[in-house]
Image (cartoon, rainbow, N blue to C red):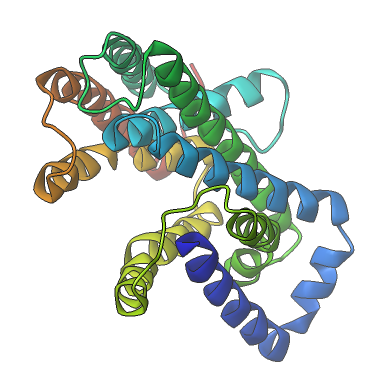
Length: 277
């Protein structure tokens, strides 16, 4: 419900702005239905899978699996010949991604073994949570690819932000109406506070990423995005509802060292014209 509020309201606002200022961008998007539907469908899968994964396993693990698999998914898409998926251009980035994968494997193992801070159930729940986190990452990589296609057609980030959420909002509203994710009665004032926080920690970062997609290669952006999970873990400790787990912290340190290397390699590629390894 919170996601529907936050993304629904911001999407309506941006679409109204685009309709007044640059209506031609909406026309271009509607003339490319395959890319538009791909953008909407991948966005819906991202958030649905992500939010359900959060119900099952530790939030820091969800966000780490999600963030770390995005650059891996981009590389796989490049291997299959997707033109918008950028290749690996230097060894530093490659080493960083290898370390990221090692960290993700470690986090998956400690989650399955019950050594992480939170699993709502047995190992089968852990597997589902890990699979949903992975599906969310693959969906975001697909969203980035569709977004770059629309960007090349001159559909700006503001327009894309508004266009990517209608399907997700529709599915989220249906889930609320069918009580698929019921949380019980919600205090209106508390809901308002959560929605306001959602604008700050969900809508703004998503829009910032949407803008970055038009300025950077998919792999460089994915590598930089991979830096976020440590902040989620810190917030998780501060918030206090999930038990601190040394095993999770160890996995995050492995992952974080790899993400720094990958981001550094991506920055070198962005600043210099180099030849792919």
